[in-house]
Amino acid sequence: MMAITTLGQFIIEKQADFPYAKGELSRLLRDIGIAAKLVNREVNKAGLADILGQQGDTNIQGEVQQKLDVYADMQFINALKVGGECCYVASEEHEEGVDLSMNTVSEKAKYIVCIDPLDGSSNIDSNVSIGTIFSIYRRLYTDRPIQQEEILQVGRKQVAAGYIIYGSSTMLVYTTGCGVNGFTLDPSIGEFCLSHPEMKIAPTGSLYSINEGNYSKFPQAVKQYIKYCQEIDPATNRPYTSRYIGSMVADIHRNLIKGGIFIYPETSNHPNGKLRLMYECNPMAFIVEQAGGKASTGNNAILDIQPRLLHQRVPIVIGSRQMVEEVERLYLNFPVPF
Ligand code: P6P
Image (spheres, rainbow, N blue to C red):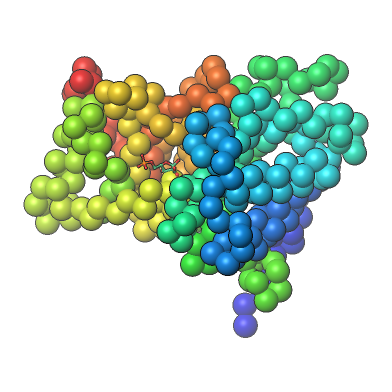
């Protein structure tokens, strides 16, 4: 009988990896885990309660907010506020960030959290897996109010990142820069239990995830790569299999488990792509790189991009290292995208 390691036990055990840690990051990760359990409870009964259907409001993306979006946002922000380790939250659901610095218990909350509380929410009504994505930075100053440069830090400065996938089971996957570990929620005890220790993504795979409906608007390099995926070549296990869920967390989680590549590129009508740098691409890039994979715009590493705007969009090519490098070679060969 394998011993159960809960998320809380694991965080405390791993805290020993950080000799100067005083437990603040550990408490912050636990706060996120608590909110995830509350959101999971509502996601699992979305079809039952009157929680389905559109709140009617629209968020900064101009997307109609589903009630679950609003609920998830409230739960994570409240957990971070009560937990007292976070001084500022940048959320997909808020045009401006949420400054918690006046509300925190510890007078100097050291961390900043960027979060997509419920990614893929357009899939809620069709019962497709959705997720939460979070990214954690340390403050640069403690002697002044939060500064813009502390919020818009480059992805390599993340101290932790993770996601929760509300799927056939609910999992929390995170990294603090010492590898990637996955925890599955055991509803019978209400605990996230270590189920996927030291996750690694295969160096190559045979799954490619992209919305081919946008084919006509893709850059030449991406069109060439799709053709490459569909060529017959048993030696390289082609043609690959196309798998696209339309929920970033679900598509990338599957590729993390099975090997593969997810691409949301720039298009002729959306030159920066669709996905957000601060709370979608940076955290997923940190996780996938820590698992041995790669994350790029096709030309540059996601984690090296200097953010300019809170809700900035970037193109993303992420997954098995060799597959991402194949796409990067094509971007070099076809430098003029359209
Ligand atoms: P499209 C969901 O709305 C989302 O933000 C991501 O989770 C997902 O990868 C992407 O958009 C899907 O976009 O244009 O293919 O529907």
